Image 1 (cartoon, rainbow, N blue to C red):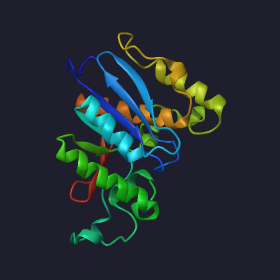
Image 2 (cartoon, rainbow, N blue to C red):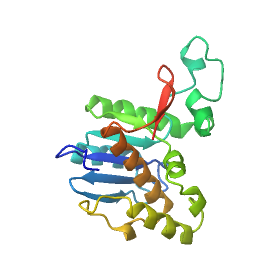
Image 3 (cartoon, helix red, strand yellow):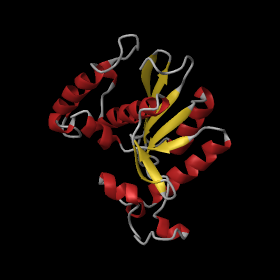
Image 4 (tube, one colour):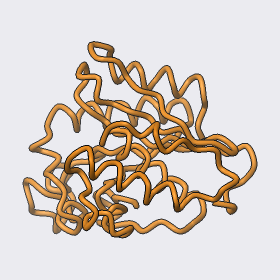
Length: 203
């Protein structure tokens, strides 16, 4: 995206179980995109913190809930115990169902905020739908991964260095979708769902 300012650094993160080795960070630096992958048994939260310290991204888009339903924070008119308005609008899982992952994500957001790094919630499936990837087999088998990554690779400006083959799992793919949403946000082209008082999901 040519609208990105010079020296802009962005993270898109597929946030997985803490020690499962399923957390992936997609990194944008001028003018290249590549991935950092958390190893199995490595602390994913520490991995993200260390990576953030090293790269100092301008902002991070994280695939995890970053707030609770307004019922729990005393917001008037918010009576749902399970879902936020954003969850209902985009068909996402309840932050309450995700439990520990939600708590980890909020704690991570708060820690990174102390470092001056803003963290935004995203839901990769929304961008996948916008890009017509669901019809190509998004989040299905390895063959569909190859088809979807070829489609994604064709969307990038040729000036951006990016290896299609580096997307070797759906975790990498979702991290890239999160990064693309961050790029859209930085270019003032992102869409937001939900109520700002309760929590927004961007894509």
